[in-house]
Image 1: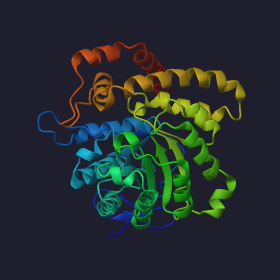
Image 2: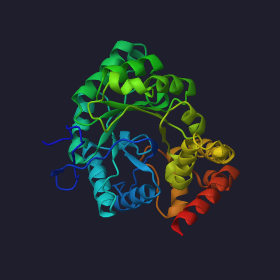
Image 3: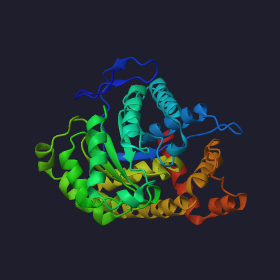
Length: 356
């Protein structure tokens, strides 16, 4: 079994299992947790929709994350996760986007199976893994710093690809890593490549970024893969501009599935304003539109996001059961909401400018 083990991040092409040396660094920016699309009736994977969406978002500058929460990773088998990764890699390569990295969700119940999924993801063509702690035994784990630290330490040590910590209390039984623990993991585990903070705790983000974004961190705590620095990423995009001032590195946001150009533009403005303060009013204006849309659409969850994609792009569908689809009346209210209409208007403006 070949895997990504060297400093240049040699990876598989995800199609026929042969390895090739393509460097796909983990960079600051906007990442989208890509939904998993299902065929009506059978709930089989809709790989045509996945391929179209991966290329659509990548062309807007958004980087893909497969089999995360939005991707219903908990509803997928091992073989389905592998199929998603291979399909995404093939779609990106066929579109000439060979240098776009793939992040894959590999968190599951036990440490053993999580490591197994990391290996399978690497073999399928994933460049990075993102790992959440299972909440099934949260009553034991949430209060045990030692157990939580051991989980990510072992996974990072045994994974053939760099690992991102996924901190999402709402999906892990309330397990919420504090800034001290995340910082310790970053310092002690050279194969950890970042953290996604879906806890929405801006203070936590600021404290972690203060350590890992300090110029001394890279020399004191070098990464196993120099192309995979430790990134601090928000789990929402509604605080992207202020997080940029705290030296964080972007966001992994479901909104980027609905409004990829708007999300990327906000990131670009948030970075550019450091050199050109005259851009701050425009960055603040767009942050307000994006932040309101993020909050409103996130409340509609996976089913609402998929329904919006169906309306806008012609694909999206419904979640895999037992998750229910959004009720028609609720979707009509979501679509008509001024926050949604504002982001749709901005997205059409930005995508039209780039297309022209």
